[in-house]
Length: 305
Picture 1: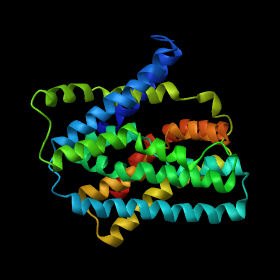
Picture 2: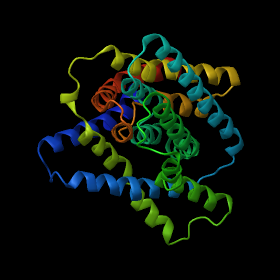
Picture 3: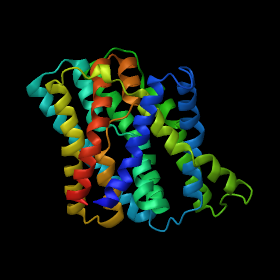
Picture 4: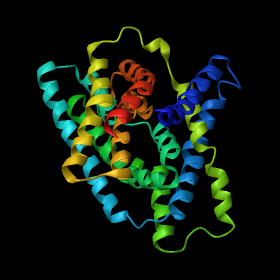
């Protein structure tokens, strides 16, 4: 339990420090969007390239089972949510936000926790997983908007473009290529990439705090609780059950279950705004799940891992 507390406390402390800095208007309001771009497009990709290029990828074949488990459960959860929607009948915009609240995950919190608990080996497996999960989640999310909202504000062509230009996917592919090809990182680049990637996770956590909107919380409605319980409780249980069925154990099981236990992603707000989703509910889900996750991740790790 102490190890768990030690791993989680700094992560959520940085998130709340970020929120505090925003409230103090420090260093300036326009600073944080620029820092977020630097983190997303440069620092985190540098971290992933460095870790993947210099890691041992002997378990890549076994890791493919891990990817299949995650994608299979995400599709199954999508079907469950569609059945639930058939009976509850949320409006299209509300359902799209409920769906994103369940299916998406926060990359920064995920990488920070994996790094704290499992180090380089864990980060490599997590990077392998997200290479396949990011495009799959985007396809599932946009398909849901097409079925239930259909605002005509987004096309699969633009979706494909966003996937092939995603800096996290490109970084994972580059790092994996450098490793498998035995090219590796040149001697001069290795320490540069290590230093460049080091601040990525802490700055990303600060950005999460800056993005929290406590005013959006208000009264938690059934749509919030259905999405949050589905994300923070039901999805980890489904992942753990799937791991048991296919015999996935140890570190890979932990990577899969913790992926499912993450709060939803801030990127879901952008997609909801672009495609006609319920942005107020999405904002509530992002903030509320981030707050709830400190407790729910602790329970998931104590019970399932």
